[in-house]
Length: 561
Image 1 (tube, rainbow, N blue to C red):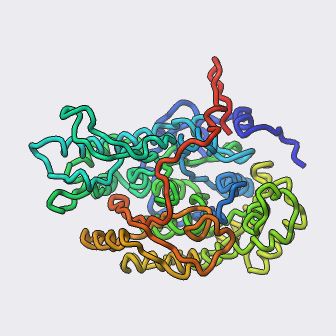
Image 2 (cartoon, one colour):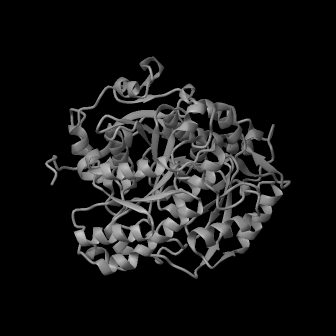
């Protein structure tokens, strides 16, 4: 049993003695004069630290998970704990993660910097504003929105944009359902043109996706110039470059493009940068952050959002496709209670030992393992252990993975930090060091739009067929008209199932995937196939986490978790 202090994530983080960020930089061989300091515990790092030759020699570990369930799986906690364990066994490792969004922090999550003794710190700063990256992305996004409406309003130098075709929305980093669909331009002629508009959450902005795929300021400007806005009255496409918006937008992002350096609870380096969602974008930190980590340490542990069918698929087919990166091992996080949920166990009964339910639900893990094999990559299963897991359940899961020819190790990072992930770390290092290959994409970017969707749906999700509704078929024609059919595919669907029906848990088969429409993210460089209802601006729950968050006269924050 652990004799560590038991408390909330925030209490554990606040009790930690942090090292000055200069000490963390020194571990990576970075001189303090190269840092841009944000107080004593945070700093931005210049892009000049990326070494193209060195990053090719070092090992990238991708952490993903089974299909998400209400009790959660713990990818971030495992990612941080794994990096702690790898450092404990003498492997110079940096964990590279996404930045939390304020919307979920004040909505349901209450925080997103790991948990227990596997956290990145300063926890409060990381969860609240951090170094201002999200704010800069929001401003760049909304500058483009203002320029679009200004061009529509003015008669001189107007591009003739048809307001009915404008697809660009404003963003804010907060959950507020009332702003999803709005009418702008009210108040008479001086208020501009009346039109239907709306807001997305900042993490869903195409600017976020662009920032996380760009590899330089020039690349950033080019990608933002390629943002598709809508059409003219003459049916001619309009891009952000037609408004000459990209220069000013990039100026707003001059600091946001630089990765952020912080630390883990055990004083190991952590790089946190960007935060696109995994159902409507690539769902992982920036290419620059990942390459920065690989340039400065022998191993990088990074994660992709939601289950492997969403985050890992997009990481490999989009992020790796553009960047040339390739993982040397993939860690799939699973929990006994989540697999029992996939086996049909009721939510309120998941803490009761039940090997039969676990046997029924393990098919979900099997499918994710099969998918990782599609990419030609080796996998390791991390069993994120909870106190209610029985020895019999853990033994069954480890034995089942062994029968499948896959290493499986228990992770106790939440409880013990790096001490609880040493065996997992040894397994991951052994597998990664033994792999000298390169991932294989599951589809060819040059294939037709419908063909790419069908390949993902059938091979990764297990669908029997794909139905393209009339709007989707018309969108494909428009995509071909614009010469964008060569772009990779980002399928937006529920994270709760392999299918587009969240009620189909476990490993559904024979289902039909329905694509309603496509959105064009030409700046980011992918096409978004929309299935089901995907919210770009969530609402707050009945009891938002915000109601528990407070601060005292000494500046001490409470309620984050």
